[in-house]
Image (cartoon, rainbow, N blue to C red; front, top):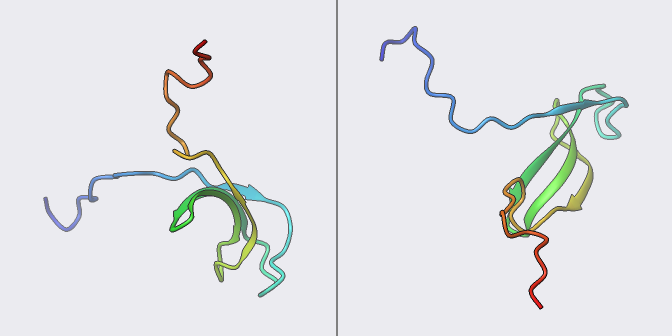
Length: 75
């Protein structure tokens, strides 16, 4: 690999732009995306300028991973 070649992409998080302004810095650069923290997976809306969290709600236990057995009821 040379300096002009990009490194492998690895994981890519899709960030969805959200309309509005940051209550902390006033920038209009909000985005919604999943994050993994010490408390598990969360769906967040964060300012992309100062990283202030505008909204944070718990997500599924495995985040973006869905098991094929999800939703199967065992009687």
